[in-house]
Image 1 (spheres, rainbow, N blue to C red):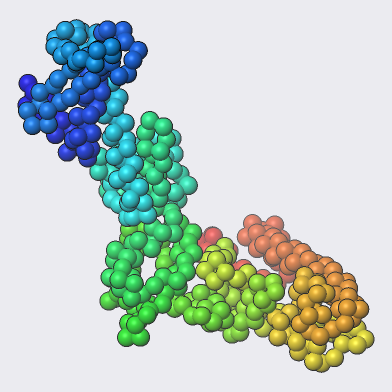
Image 2 (cartoon, rainbow, N blue to C red; image 1 turned 60 degrees about the horizontal axis):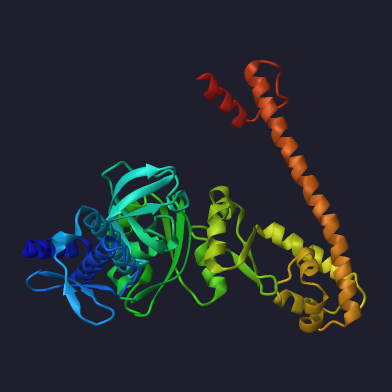
Length: 437
């Protein structure tokens, strides 16, 4: 029986990754608790127990606190109730040891890429079996629209490990940016070896991700290595993400070049930086405007996160109009020189709104204006900004009304409720499409 006990403890130690000596100590402590229960003792030093590590023999004794002598106690003398106490103590301590072992094991793996098996959904959280533990993936860490069935393989990031009282909470993620980073390390050896470095990243899970990469080896093309031959490497990552788009751009220490790269596939004409506002004004042609902004503003939004700049996109006429209004307004203030205007341009101030936002201190310190002149310039720009804002709002309203009117003309033409004054080709094509002509 003693050897059988040792074998059971060794089996538990292997399966649960717990030190065998720790389990033996738990068993000894459980026997001491059983003895104290049997003899109604409150003194923790009155009883002792030791298990032979080779034979499995268990020796239980009672210390005489007056004489210091030790009296061995047969285990059979303890009876049924103390034995139940010993069993409960052992189970409790074994569970505590297992929890400590899990906490230690998974804490070391935090931030790693792990693969588990989907078990079930509890509320909105996905429960995933990883090795001998269960991890949970909150709704916020799941890719929108993604659904797993029990038994499906789940590849995810081990985001966090928490000690939650009687259990270890293992938090998993597929929405975190580091999940993309770990996938690239797994698929692209140069990234794992740090030959290629992912310098910056921005992501909207399930939709699109942008990465800026750089190579420390001039012979290695950072973008080409990440994409792979005929897109083999990037395709594996995209498949893992369920079709999420990934844009890989070349990193550059120059903010202007980096911003231009980040807005790809759109072609950028010019980049104007205002360091005081942390704003980058991007000039693109009309035919590149929608591409630069992206669907629902996604491309420009991700580019802004990637570069750390507040990105504003304008067409050349809009940019030129803003400069003209600014110059006209500032020149109207007595005392402003061409040199001051040039310095404002260098600062990236391209509209009356920019001057209103930066305030007088910048104009005094950087543009060489006096305090009084700076106040006058800011006041003039503030007043002009109100007028320009009102004009822009009126233009938007007029455009909205025009679009609504055009839509109404098309409907009237289709339903026969009236003839549009001059239907254009697009309206006629729409009507033909709806009527099946």
